[in-house]
Image (cartoon, rainbow, N blue to C red; front, top):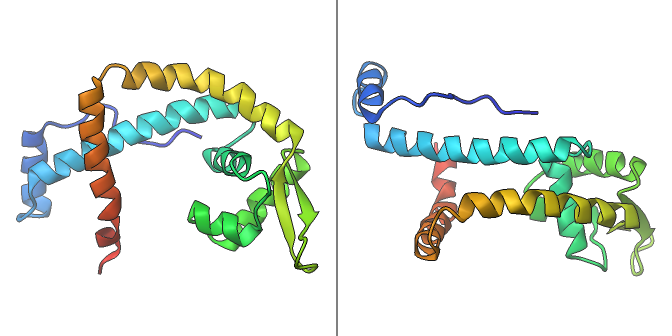
Length: 171
């Protein structure tokens, strides 16, 4: 499902004028940077969702397929939830639907009979192998518009941004 976002971004000056009324001490440059970042992230997400929709997948379900592909031994649901950054209740719902679709399977845990391990099925792997060749040329073309030096510089900034996201939760 497409995420709603402003299609025609305001200029930094327009943001400054708007913010002056709503939040007089706001730095329009910070708001503008945030808006630009969110616009790019939303566009990337929407285009990826368009590819995934042909497979009745969400980005969350694709993420689980990808994670399980990188863990051939399987993963317990709590580990999947932790690594995906969601609750166990969220994972449980995703796993149930994906199991019904035949994308993954539950297997008895070797050491803990009360638990189970989630593994990718052949259908899940085939789905990944079908989606990635459709998506990669698009994302490669997008990022190919930037030099390796530009991408490395952006990567460094993005890593710093990831490290600083906890300040968003501060009250």
